[in-house]
Figure 1 (cartoon, rainbow, N blue to C red):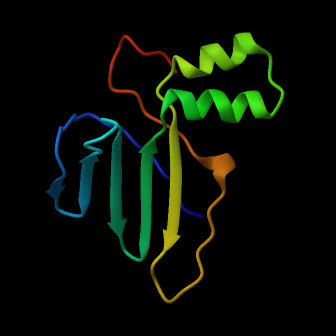
Figure 2 (cartoon, helix red, strand yellow):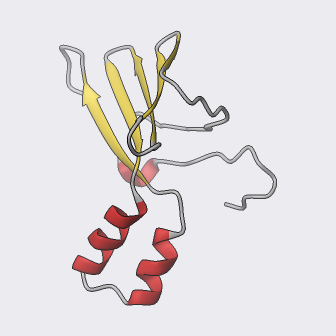
Figure 3 (cartoon, helix red, strand yellow):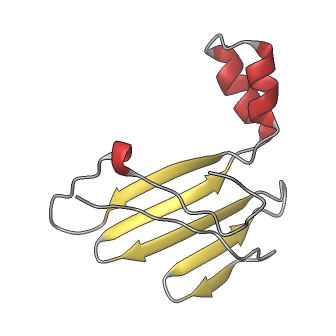
Length: 106
């Protein structure tokens, strides 16, 4: 089982490559993404535009107060890829996140 722990600490306005971690800011939207490749496993976090988040949740029939609240958050899409020649198992229910800022509560 693979456990994934993330703590996004840095903000970079350009694409920056640090080891195998890539930060990118889309020049048109200003949205950020982060990608990491490690030992046959790749993960990419992509910041989603608030309008896209709102349309996605509204299309699923959620109440407007929930849609509006979700649009106020920074929401990410996730792309996980197996870049090895072997099978991997990933249990999303085991994912956890870390918050480095004391002003943000888990």
